Image (cartoon, rainbow, N blue to C red; front, side, top):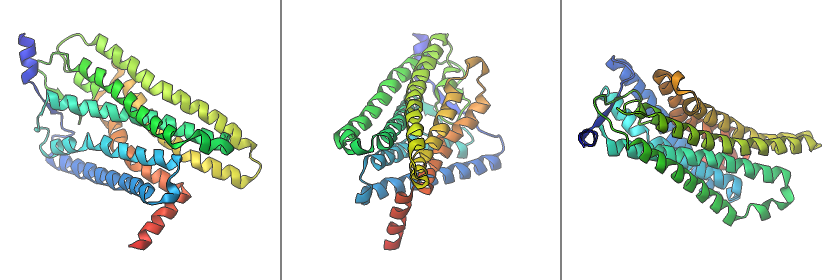
Length: 309
């Protein structure tokens, strides 16, 4: 009972990046610029797809939804991180607040991973079965795949968050991170967390390995189909529609695998923070840039929109 009372009253604080206020302000400015750039870039992609009827096809439907996910995903982290940078780590977060942030981060991140696998399947159908593409990738199926991504993200996030926040938290209340990440929060528990670490590893392995396996299988068939295309222009066009997606997959899965699939004995809080910056701030910036730079239809839609102004 005493442990439960202590846990209920616990407030967490985030370990500052530096004890030098000038460095903290510099990091704050960098984070703020990255956050605003991510918001503007992903909002632009989502709006362009919405207002251009020529982009109302499954590929861009999934791309627009990925952009919306990235907006909410980054927004689950950035405001609290920015507040803590300005306050030198003195902005408290309650256990319910920390749990809410963790839930939405895992929920949206999980949905993001599943959606990337769905996008690989869409490219597989478009390149390997072009004549049947519109019949296979019908709008009802696209909506079901999108909803399925969200449902899977929710079902993965809820039990993990509940499991972690059933742990007792006692004296140490400083999270060595800039948001409520699962490994960092578990390190503060004053109880045996071996079961929780094992559960986190198993679920992370499933969430990352299954969609990644589907992506890999899809691209094996895609590459085989591209190599059978006789014209160089046709091969280039087919490859350009896939290369953007491959780059995004490598960034997203590479960073998350490093954090959640590395052995707990080799987990470095400092390195964890650095890598987390990549997939919480940098990747959401790069996604719209990668897709817009390598996608002619999206670039044309942006030019038409800018001419109207």
